[in-house]
Image (tube, rainbow, N blue to C red; front, side, top):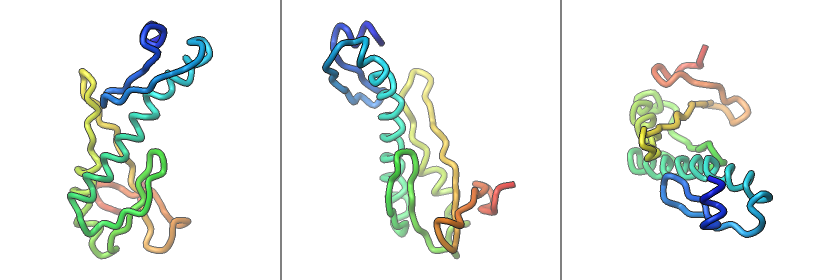
Length: 127
């Protein structure tokens, strides 16, 4: 990584995005190292949003917050859609040994403040 930064002044992630860097390598190395996983997680989250919207057009995407997707779905329908939601959130990071970063699931029929961890299989509050 340090050699790549010294010779090309760039870093890249496994999705092929390239980030150029200015400054002394010793100064920018920590930021350049952090950019790779941070950009990867952001891209996984954005790709998951697109896949979710294609898989369930009735989902209302409200926002993306770094590594989270906030969306709405009718309460009466969410359990039956859990397998589709879970599959849509699977984004393969194209490493030599492919990686899928798992999403957890939180939900509430009342408000954001009432969101609790939910079990992917049952849709019930996680133990």
